Image (cartoon, rainbow, N blue to C red):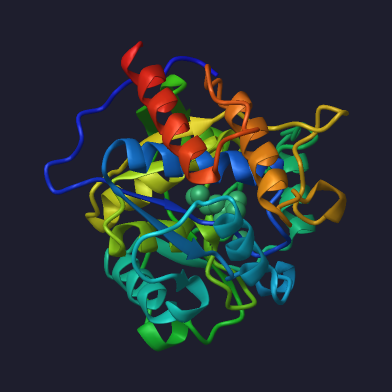
Length: 317
Ligand code: GLU
Ligand code: ZN
């Protein structure tokens, strides 16, 4: 992992978070995100909050949230404050969507994946495999009107955010350095509320990070590509922009991202020895050096040493 830059801690205190989706137990990759965000919070004498991102109900597995919490505790990764579940925050998301309507920046879309693919094909746009289609704006009105609030939640349509023309977002990632993304060219007007009524990750994560006063987001590099969208939403909603640090991804033997859906990838935390071995692997992946091998160390002692190693890594760059 590249060297990290040390941001000055915010005056009103560091607040970090880990935001797992309960689609399965923790695996090596999600443990890296949990450990990295925990160490960064502890190193900054900050708070580390947990938010269960359970909005995409068809993908959630009952009981996976409790399993994740058990695994975190087995690894000594204790959290601050109350646990939260996104499924309990519908009112917040509704309010944010209404606000965006007032700003006349959202519009309904009834396109299917197929019709979007067709519209792109007609324009000669080829979407590389593994990449999301860039929405061509088929349903976007010339002028975005003000919609009736009640209608937003009734119509059988997805709601998309209308991007201003030629919008490039630039930000500094504390691990990866300068980043930029042209949202029009790389994403297009994106969905905030799905046709089935489910609020999307992009909207929910931004609303909750702001509501919870999160100042530092430390998460896996698989989410890097979402950051520009989130920064744009934060700026139009008038929220503070947190700092971002994306951690290296853990890949499987075929070079693919680990999936929570495959139980084979779950980590083992049934006893302290196993938990410590999983933590050591995660720390190695984070590039932490000179850590105790764990034979005669308790998890608490090992985590203290890891926090110091994280500190050395940050201050040496
Ligand atoms: N819920 C997301 C995931 O598990 C993480 C969201 C985030 O950290 O922004 O991939
Ligand atoms: Zn559409």
